[in-house]
Length: 467
Image 1 (tube, one colour):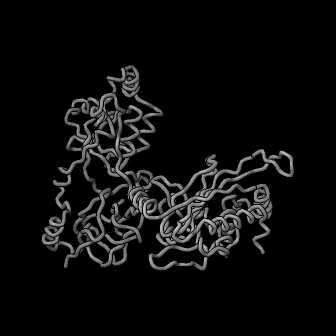
Image 2: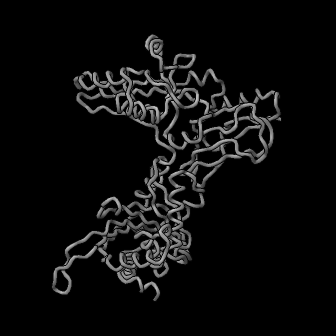
Image 3: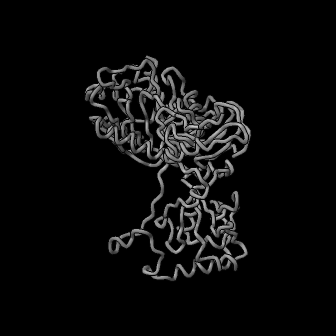
């Protein structure tokens, strides 16, 4: 009997998922618990497995499209059996089930590239290579209408549109082509089914053909008024041209979560300067005793010190739960890591019970997998306290937004040589500015100040962590 394949809940905060690609194609046999698709959630790319054995009879939601939790994305059953009733049900629930309707379903993207290209977006079956899916995760592939360019296509030896006269282009490639005046009609795609991908644009920019070079030169000679027009630019006279891109699930969740934080949570900020000379020397001493591949960073030391300080100040290591306050026995530190689509916070569990070298190893390993979108939900959720360090970018001081339900987050700036007065003399010391954002529902001013005093003392005199 044919059954529905529904979009599963693959992470705690997931409300919608994007099919990164179908690993199985229509007509393929499937074993129970076998991976059939990869789904982009809010924080990672997760594998979706089949709950039963059978044949993949129909793909309802193709690669690159979104589906809400519980929405029908496919049909599984015995080969050759009738599943028309399930197709009707999927159609009534708002799913596109006919291939011809998928081809007709378009989404204008004139604001992504010049109107002269007249692009249309259509859903495309997701049988792309995994390498390209990881590298190009911004959205759907695009079919460019070639109606007005068919004559040019016949003349171009490198351009090979599909049977419907369209050129398939990935979103990253479309953006790069628009930004660098690369003529898509002159390119031959190296991706699946002739899809133009990022590396094709890069190659065209590095080794442009004669026609491309002439096109770029002609664009440079044009006056601003003759430049390609972006959709919406004419709405306000002399306004800047613009383009829009679909937000990723990660960016949508970041926006929703932080909007929840800055509004309902009464937040205040505490800032302190810390002398870092001893901490820097402490790190050097540790690295002198271990292998090169185990080297620790100053941020690893900061994570360890914060975890130790949290054990002495339980109100900072807590969360407000409406009618109760939840106090955590261990310090699970979320470490903010920048990734392509936004920000993710791998969690170092029980950091107060781990050494600096072990913390460094965990952060390095999880940060690498975070950038590849391979973290499991339990690895980036459930922190009790977070640290965001922008010191490596030269940022001296900033404030960070609390990630609910945590009660605080520490924003760490760069440690910079600074002239200070000490014992009546001007000396040069490395000073680091940290600012803690506090949830006033559980952390009072004095409570937060005492935590920062302990944190400062432990960084300036690391031996105090043994006391």
